Length: 139
Image (cartoon, rainbow, N blue to C red; front, side, top):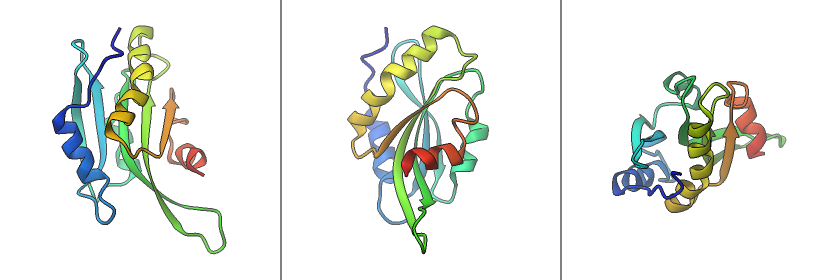
């Protein structure tokens, strides 16, 4: 149905700010896909925001794609900070099936168009969207 979505030039420019190696201007992008199969940038969180600042911005009953800098400490001794660029498909359990399919089928497509995404994750509830779960996927 919506498998041909394209990352817009606006999104690619914002993503370039997100992937800067030191002090990125953007730390997260929350995307929606409209009925015309267009990717819409709903939110962009500046470089001072953390992963936990994303959760309140994500609708609980509608899908979204989240692309973010995820910074965490690994399990080494001593631990070191690691940064991964993560694309998350948020397809909540209560969302209509057709909408879940739209997001699930497009997250990897959008990530590949942006390039340099380290990890792609599917999340259907808040536990799966938690920082702890994303960290587990990134280790």
